[in-house]
Image (cartoon, rainbow, N blue to C red; front, side, top):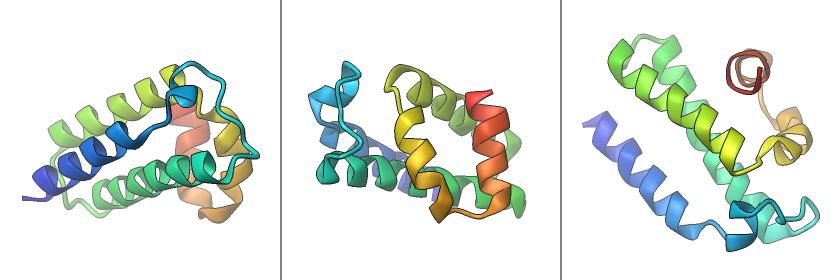
Amino acid sequence: MIFMDYTKRYNDWIVSIPKELFNGQGSINDYATKNIVRVYIDLCSEEFYLHKKGLIEDEIWNIWSSGMRDIFKYRRLEPFWKVLAVEYDDDFVHFINHEIIG
């Protein structure tokens, strides 16, 4: 059930992304765009902690973390992450910086 709930949240998020974020023109100074990115990073954070606590299977975690890599790469979220990272704890920041962004 957790998988379906998170899949729905992801799907709801992906359709809300402004086209500017798709083509790398989204501005960090645009409040609405930054909040849309924050919603996704919050989702990633929750998924990270579900995995860390052993509440989801490795197979699902592998799908989610692979998706995170794709989203950060193709949606150009790294500039937003650099601004928003201060809102998250060290474990999650380390995970994003080393496992997702590289």
